[in-house]
Length: 312
Image 1 (tube, rainbow, N blue to C red):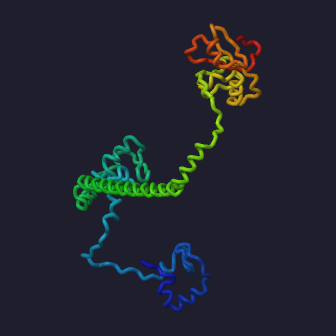
Image 2 (image 1 turned 30 degrees about the vertical axis):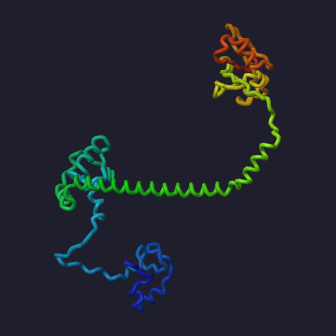
Image 3 (image 1 turned 180 degrees about the vertical axis):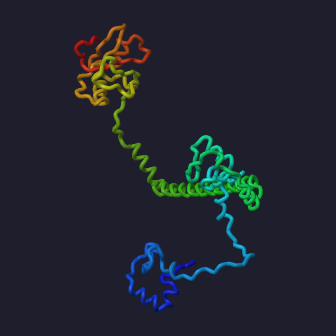
């Protein structure tokens, strides 16, 4: 029903119009219209509308769409059609027999829909009339559910194919746009060949004769008795074998946020003896002259200057 701003009865009645002119005009919170508020909680349409005529024909039929009544025939627990209906005496809500039995057995003794207390299973009673009503409207419920599942599967497959086709089309368009951009950004063939020839003829500013330094694998661990600094998150390192112990100390200072880095002391073990490494010694010399097995990984320990009462 379309509601007008002013009802017809109000427009045709001089007495109501005079009475309305005396009332202040405001926005009615119920109708959201700018109209007089004669009775709080009611609109002018509710007050002055004509009552509906009563249908006295015993053979009259009212047509209602099935999807409007659909939620009334579904179980609130399994969301499927109600099977072997059980009704709760306290609140008159209906459920599948298996669903409500399981809720009372493993859950709280309350209605799954309104949470009212259910003392025991004796509060449940069968509702054969409701089962008969569902059967008269839908027929075999299991056949209906199987048909709905097939229709949903077809619809999902169709939508998935449409989504894939749309995504593929967008990808093709994007590739075409990128191809156009690359084509427009490339210089002509003659200019490209000329630029390549100039680069080849230009003298190179790179330093020649450099060789790549061999790498060395080492493990840098905190001394077992050291508590002033933390451990490294990654103890395994791979670096140039020409690196000196001094650079290793600078690395530790930056990684562990310790200053000054000269306080670090780096040592290794050779023949069950602790050897403190000097700053100017390279890792290659440590592997060659100090380590027991030059083929294995070099294990270094670091700490801050020795504290009183701690032996090496």
